[in-house]
Image (cartoon, rainbow, N blue to C red):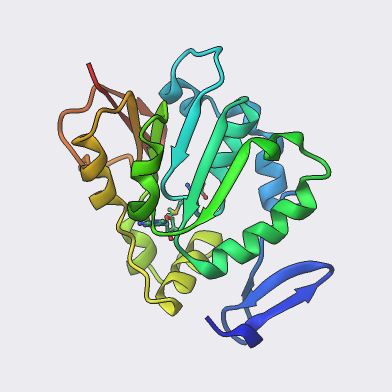
Length: 211
Ligand SMILES: C[S@@+](CC[C@H](N)C(=O)[O-])C[C@H]1O[C@@H](n2cnc3c(N)ncnc32)[C@H](O)[C@@H]1O
């Protein structure tokens, strides 16, 4: 992480990716904001969570750009979101600080900068463990543009690997209530014995329930 690559533009913290590109997050306007507005329609993830009126404790082991975490928060749940990247963490904390004034639900978020493997056992009482591993094509397909590609760039600057599949294996050996894994629609499951799946056009949620 190069300190001199952080800069503010229009009051928003950015990190320089190349001479032409930078990464920043803003929940108050732009693409992320538009998704936030449409979150009511994010029915796939709602189905994966299941019908539940009670407030759930969700551990998001792969926070990324916090989109999925924000869906959980908007649905009224409490979230512990963990992201290993120091760069992403700083950019997102900046976005959260600005968005907190508009959205009360951020009060239900605990955002932690760590390898999830180090902290997950402190949250074994979570109702849901959520994993969204980086899709392979993000690494391979250099043409793919957008935030996910830039997140891939940032992770390689920081020499970080996506190790969420190992953490998923670890959690499956524990006493859990529900584990949800987001996967590309045609990819193999991380573990075959899925209890149910919620399928969209490009992605699906594999849901594991301990009986
Ligand atoms: C595909 S992104 C997640 C996107 C996220 N669900 C969203 O809605 O924006 C995967 C993220 O998980 C993070 N990650 C992978 N392994 C991790 C680990 N062991 N601990 C913490 N974060 C991890 C990566 O750094 C990356 O930011």
